[in-house]
Amino acid sequence: MFKKQNRANTLSGILFVALFAMAATYIAEFQFFRSYGISPLIIGIILGIFYANTLRNKLPQEWVPGIIFSTKTLLRTAIVFYGFRLTFQNIEAVGISGIFTSAVVVTLTFIIGYFVGTKLLKLDRDTTILTTAGSSICGAAAILATEPVLNSEPHKSAVAVSTVVVFGTIAMFLYPFLYKAGFIDLDATGMGIYIGGTIHEVAHVAAAGNTLGSEVANTAVIVKMLRVMMIAPFLLILGFWLTSKDSSTNKKTKVTIPWFAVAFIGVAGFNSFDLISHTVVSTINHLDTFALTMAMSALGMETSFDKFKKVGMKPIYLATILFAWLIFGGFYITKLSMSI
Image (cartoon, rainbow, N blue to C red):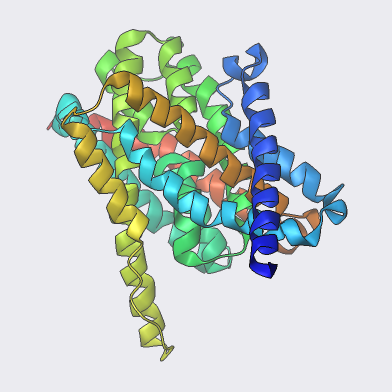
C-alpha cells in the first residue's frame, strides 16, 4: 500500500511537470516566439525557474520524486530518442568541409572554454563544462546530456542554458546582418557551414539560415545536426577524462559510460536505414521535444535565484569569450574547410 502511494505521488509530480511542458509548447507557438526561434525547451526552463522562485513552497513534498525523475530518467531517455533527428547520410550530404568544421569547432571550443573557465576565470569545473558544452555542441540539448555525466547541481545547468538563450539569440540576428552587409566573404554553402558550425541552438540555426535562403538553411541545419551527433563521443570521452583526473588525485572513482550516449548513436544508426515511415519519425520527434521540454521545466523547478548568486557573472564572461571565438575562429575554420 505504501509503495503504491509513493508511485502515485511520483506520477503526480511527473504530471505536474507535464503541465508546464504543455504550457511551454503552447506558448512557443505564438508568432513572436516562432519568429525569434525560441524553442519550447527554453520557455520550459524559464517557466520552471519562475515557479521555483514564487510558488515552489506550495508544492507537496511527496511530488518531488516526480520532478527528480523528469530531470534524470526522462532526460536520459529523451536524449536517446534525439537520435531519430539524425542519419549517417547527413554526414555524406555536407562532405568533408562540414565534417571538418563541426569536429574542429567542437574540439577547440571545448578546450578553449575549459581553459578560460577554470584557469583564467577560476570558475568551478561543472559550470565551466556545462557552459562550454552548450556553446560548442548544440545548446540546451548538449547541456542536458552533459549534466548526468557530471552529476552536477540543477542550477548550474540552468545558468548554462541562460547563456545559450542570450548568445544564440544574438547570433541568430547578427550573422544574417553581417552577411547581407558584406562583412562575411562566403558563398551560400560556406555560409551554411559557418552558421551550422558555430550558432548554439538548432532553432537558432534554422532561423538564421532561413533568413538567407533555402540553400544556406539546408546546409546549416545538416552541419548543425553533425554537431548534435557529436554529443555521444563527447560524453564518452568526457566520462573517461573525468575518471582519469579523479584517479590522478587518488579519488576512488569508476569509469561510468553514459549508456544514453551509446544508445543515441544506435538510434541514429537505426534511423539511417529508413525502416520506419517519416510520419512515425516525425511523431517520435514531436514526443521527444515534449519530453525534453519536461526535463527543462523540471530543471527550472529545481533552480532558485539564491543559487544563481553563488555563481555570479563568470559564466556570462565565459560565454561571451566563447561567442567571440565562435564568430571569428569559426569563420577562419570554415574558410579553411572550404579549401580542403
